[in-house]
Length: 86
Image (cartoon, rainbow, N blue to C red; front, side):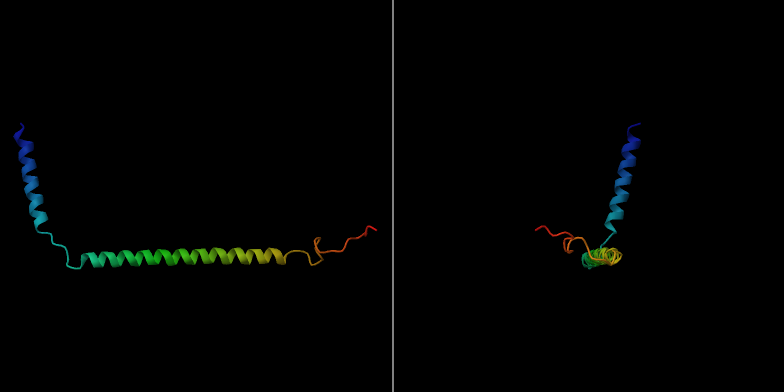
């Protein structure tokens, strides 16, 4: 009974060795993979920069809109006192 798993393991090992022996990487595989990785990294950074710029722009526009909605009268900070103390 122990010979069946050992035989199966041996045949599987031989098959995988044969398969692995027939696989040859492309000569420029590393350069291609690195180029793809750098392109993806650059794209991520550009998308992040655009997202940050968009959030900043929306915050500025929203802040200006809120300030524009304030009443047109004089504010409480820069008004003259109503009753001067003498």
